[in-house]
Image (cartoon, rainbow, N blue to C red; front, top):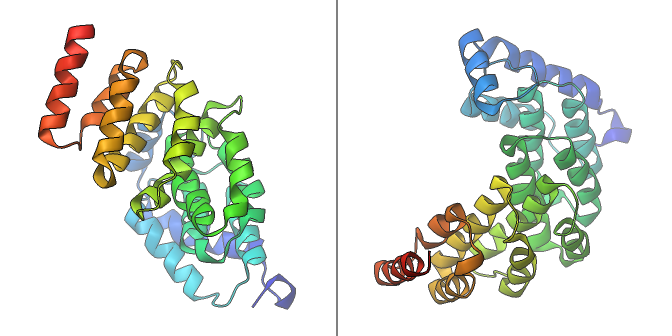
Length: 248
C-alpha cells in the first residue's frame, strides 16, 4: 500500500500517538524532560515500549513505499512531543533499507530540528548512516554536513561513518577529513563524537586509531582522548596515556 493507495500518514501518526500515550507515567516524563533539558512535551514512555508500538504499527501497514514511510515520519514529527519524534526516528530506522539518498533532505531537516542527541544520533548513525552505506550518492550531502554551521549537523556527519566502520568498510580518509578540522572545537558533542568514532575504528583497525590519536594528541580534548583509547589494546592505550601525561 502506498500514499496513492489510501495510506493516511496523519491518521497513522495519530494511531501511534494513541498507542504510546497510555504507556507513559508522569514521573518518567518529568525525569526524561529534566535529563534531556528539553522543551518538548514528554509522555514518559520507555524506549522498548516505543519500539514495540512502532514495530506493531509497521506490521499493520505492510508494503508501504518509501515516500509513505517518510510522510508518516514527518507527520509524527510535526507535534512537539518527544515520544512522537522518537517514534519517527524508529520508523525510519526500521525502514532504512527502503530509503535512498533523496531522503537525506528530510533527514537533515529533522536533525536541524532535533536539539538533542537523543534524536540526532539515531537519525545520523542509523538512518543517514544506513542510507550512505548502501547508496554512495549520499556522500556529497554528508560532506557538506561536516562543514555546516550547526554543530548537530556536523556531529551527524561523523556519526554517518559508523555503520560502514562496523561493517568493516570504514572510510578512514573521510573520517580524517571530517574530524581533523573539528578537533579545535569547544562543543562537547563534537568532541565526544570524534572520540566515539575513533573508539569504533579501534575495534576493526586499532593501528589506525592509535596512530591517528598519537598524531593529533596535542589538539585533542580530554573527552576525545578518553573515548579514543577506551577500546584499544591495553599496551597501545597505556603508551598513549603515558605520552599524553608527559605532554600535558
